[in-house]
Length: 243
Ligand SMILES: Nc1ncnc2c1ncn2[C@@H]1O[C@H](COP(=O)(O)OP(=O)(O)O)[C@@H](O)[C@H]1O
Ligand SMILES: [Mg+2]
Image (tube, rainbow, N blue to C red; front, top):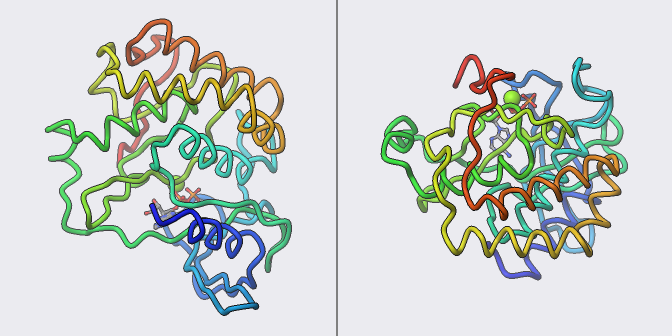
């Protein structure tokens, strides 16, 4: 990640910069746009995705108008754990189509073979698998994984996370039941502390209090069991289509 001042500037541009749209994500299920957010003071610019709440398609299993907030909450969890698996994401109180989220656009490495990464158990995927278990991601498809040229992997499209019901649906079951390693347990312990402090306060701005509490409980359970979760027999465990 960039230095903390750079990161702060980037988040400020996403949150409050002047947003100009120049395209639309054709593969998106919601009305999602791409554009540039620009700080008027010094002209700093960041290319970004903008998902206005007004463009969110209603879903049967998530309350209307909450997806943008869930995306921001997912970024906050990734940062607090030190995982760095979600591009910088901020909530905008306004934008060309009203309130919504803005997320840094990531130029993915088209050369990377995702199927091979899945087969070989790429450590970046393992990190995302643990992140998904914490945020209760109900839609981790291949298209929501972005490989970076430096070998890291990021995840996007976290609008359907943080349900209070267990709904983990992912293509990353390769580590199911596998013991967590010391750095993973340390990250979860860090997250638990953060949830009891500042992260907990931030999540209350973006999620229902019960959803924050359920996140705390998932972290607690992962720490107590010391293993990756197993798929639930009561829930379709793999997204369809998977990519
Ligand atoms: N921050 C990003 N950087 C680069 N590509 C992105 C980013 N966010 C989304 N995309 C690309 O756009 C596609 C559609 O976006 P997605 O977040 O899945 O939208 P929706 O919520 O409507 O399904 C993704 O599958 C991904 O390929
Ligand atoms: Mg999507």
